[in-house]
Image 1 (cartoon, helix red, strand yellow):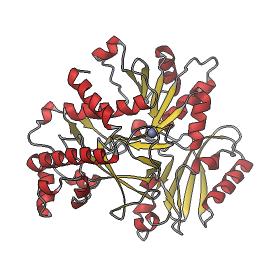
Image 2 (cartoon, helix red, strand yellow; image 1 turned 180 degrees about the vertical axis):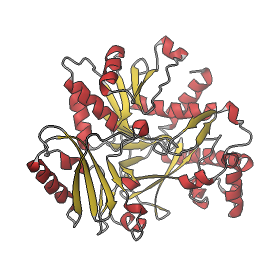
Image 3 (spheres, rainbow, N blue to C red; image 1 turned 135 degrees about the horizontal axis):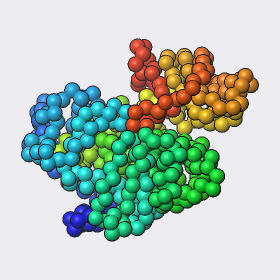
Image 4 (tube, protein in one colour; image 1 turned 90 degrees about the vertical axis):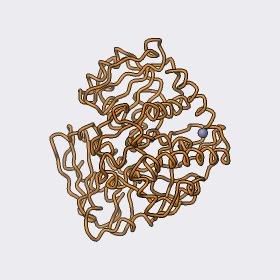
Length: 438
Ligand SMILES: [Zn+2]
């Protein structure tokens, strides 16, 4: 961490306590600066504004953001690299990330050093607020096969120590590494953390004793949260990270909701293109205020959240979300339009004996495949319980099929999706129908 980074960090630590008016002013200033930069240097943004007869000066306040069109993943994929990158920030001086389809944009993504720093400081602020202390060791169960082993100077001095653990190894190997390094904080995807917890439970005299577990990237359902908390005997907190926006929101124990990092990323919660009222669910649309190399403007993230009615109690001004649902396609939508929140589904499996791992795939609106990787005890009566429990949840005429498999392989980059709905791709299943129900 350099002096200018400490200065930036001081500023963003202060910004989390701004009152709503001053937060809006800060957002407006950052947005207008980003739009001016993007209009001058990023061809797609210039074309977008020109096509609507907008000039950068029209987007001076946060309320003006609605003048800009929504964008999404396929739009960015359709652009040529030269159309989406800033022409005054040479690519060779940027950090480049290659993403796969499962983690976000399947394209090369550039960030300036400053974009990257601000992204990291944004996460660091959320970690500090969640009880992380800078002298503590943090282990990240990363999705990557090959992990970064470079140590920065601050790590050598003993603060912000971070080590990545490859999720391509076996959980027993993760546990070996972690028991040697003895981290205070574990960070990882929910599924990965649960696999680690299972390995921990199976090992006699396991010595891993984290003080906190930070979960992200997948829905932290109650069953997984309880399992992690009882296994490791420490608080488990949820973080909403996306590749495109970095840390979007994080769980605040004092407020009982998720603070949005609205000073760093504008997070709009929309339904049919209009902002929802507090208490309502809508889709997440982000504008990353610190992405100058490849600006993301009003980008549809693909997740749905519930905006909170609560005002923060912890002294922060960052507004709150009540809930974060999984990716939109991971909601099961039934024929009558009822949607099953991903958090509900794991509870179906709790009373069923003999299940090591499960996955629910919805190939059609009236069909559900339940894939089971069994262990001892998955017999006829277990099957019957499973079908009964699933019908209790669905309450609809759905054809259920149990498929026993040897192994439920994790996807590349370890982003296993426990619930996969393919319904959206089907003709005659309008996406908006589900979105209009409570
Ligand atoms: Zn709070």
